[in-house]
Length: 342
Ligand code: F6P
Image 1 (cartoon, rainbow, N blue to C red):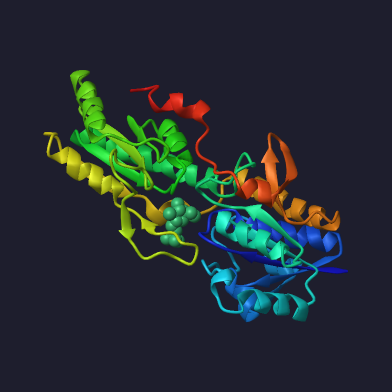
Image 2: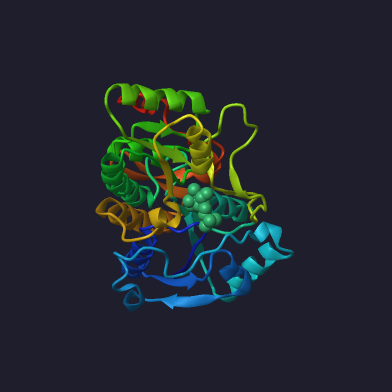
């Protein structure tokens, strides 16, 4: 019998619970017992645990968020944090650790591997910005919410002849804004990978008006950079334990700039946490289930310091060193979609 520890770190997204369920249930079949650490890296630092038996993960497949709780705690920023984790793992007789999260959580797993911890990552982020996997858990579900929001915005935009701006998440990568914009039929799509010019957006709206289209829908990623700006539009300058500022407000910035030039009303909707919540889509439930089971398989094969990755239809291990050293912007091969329907 081996013992696995599992934790969930960073921003939550739909599908995490499906992965936890798969780890516990598939692990049980393979004689692996699982215990959960609570609230991200705070769990192993402060020895906050809960047992995860098969019955404990019953009925969670379709529920968003994480039953273990999450945080943005960084053990490398806490005095003695790593030693405390090592002690907790020893004290709970953990043979290996599975961390479900985005690049920050996966980065901690990689660094702990250098301290002798046998650990595996499962990529989870609605931003879909982790390299070397086609998709991360949560992206497909968030994409569904963004698409639904655009469908709903269309009715008011059309009926009231308005320009409506939808701000979505995406710190450095425009996967949600680009693919959401295509799926939801946005008229202007703005992503962090390319600076945007207010003048250009204005011209696009005027071109639509000339075609008797008296409304426009703009989708913009929170990380989008106005041309000539040094950085991004932030709602809070205080950085978190991983050095990130809180982004937000670029949609309103764009609205303010455009309202001086346009005669029709502009309104901004910020989708914020609505896009991280709710039930996972079938795609995310299946991806998370496969990632959870694969993490157990990799551990039993002695493959550590790796993450589970989707390559086409296959789940494969990828070195964390490789995955974390490469950024994951939107594939430039998809940039043509930005202007396809203008
Ligand atoms: O999960 C990643 C992300 O969705 C980013 O796009 C966003 O900037 C961030 O989380 C905000 O999350 P929080 O407010 O929970 O720190």
